[in-house]
Length: 188
Ligand SMILES: [Fe+2]
Image (cartoon, rainbow, N blue to C red; front, side):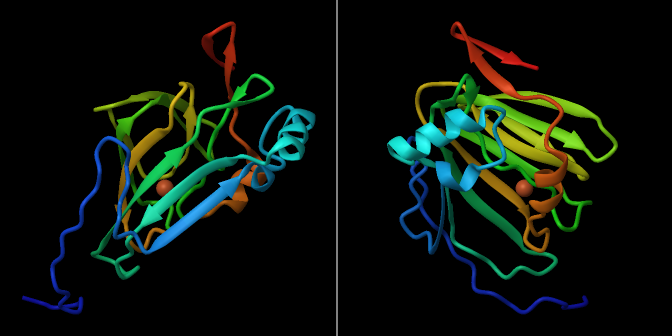
């Protein structure tokens, strides 16, 4: 048998399936409202939110593994509830740098949508709620959106060498946005 990867010692870590807390996480990424300029339709509403409190938008907890082929990266994504104008709080969204790599999101808590698009213009959205697994196939950019009133918490797994490409989404955007209008989730 060919051995390309270094032998790594197996490990186990604990994840609180209610809150998503991963006590042994060593990487903690935080995005506040002020990190989201340019992403929402109503830029003035975002500026008002930033001026008022600049709330935490989402955070990602990771306990990283080597970013090389063969390994699986995993993380907890925690997206807080709220709206910018009527548009629901969302993550920036990204393609993978190695775009032919998939990702699995298992929703642990909350309510939302996984919105996805391809560079060729296809769009899709899948509901997320506790127990829903969304499979993001290769070549699909993906963004989570919180449509509920509690944190949207997901456990994510993807090839460790996939990488994140935020730049293309910054330029292209997604063809549809998710709004809360009179209590109803509207994707348009
Ligand atoms: Fe991803």
